[in-house]
Amino acid sequence: MVQASIPVDLFNPGQVFACLGFMEAADILRGHAEGGFDWSNDADTRFTLKADSDRNPFATVLEFLVEAEIVSLAPANSSNDTAKWKIETVSLPDGDPFPFPDPDTPATLPARLTSADGREMVIDHWGDGTLRDKVKFWAGSGGYPGVALVSDMRDLIKTSVVEQCRGFADAVSDPFALSAAQSGSFRFDWRRTTSQSMPGFLPTAKRTSICSGFRLSNSSRQSASQMQDRSASEILNIDTALQ
Image 1: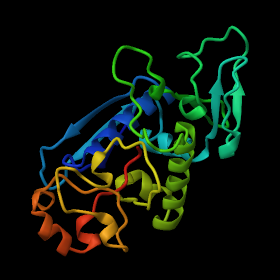
Image 2: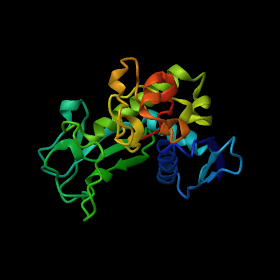
Image 3: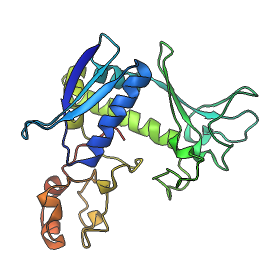
Image 4: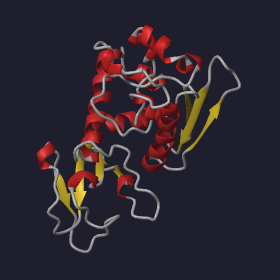
């Protein structure tokens, strides 16, 4: 097993969620993944991850995300498809299990990512059919499918690696140093855009602002008037995580 670590801001919920995503993805792709946070050094907090592989587990996950083919899945005889969003829909054979009843719209069709060597990862949490609240954070997005968001996020990762890194190794060693302007997201980090806890902070008031969230630090607890006076680069300093 190979162990590796990356820098993480533990006051940034998006990065914490992304670390858990790295661990789950590594477990699916390689098996026996274990991870943990190390804050013994306040100046260098880290997330450590290992999996059943002879390669860096962060490299394994990032390479899979960049290279995987993305399709949506539908149960047999379903009329749902995501062709409108230029994403192929694969209908499962009659009798094959589907994680939840055929949805009313294609927005919640599961996304399947497949690598060239046949490894697969299915994302379907938004179709949770238990008695818990439906886990679909991007409600109100006009029916934009989850699989389309997966594709958009993957494209942002690919673009960020090419434009901001001297090589893939840079992205692997510090993935949260990458950032990109987003037109949509899964909203796992609610601080990505406006915050009801900060009356008066309106990103659209600053046309040069690019919302990617902000840290849960002392700066984010300042008054609304102080926040509005600061530049976009000072306010919106969160690195986009793998949401």
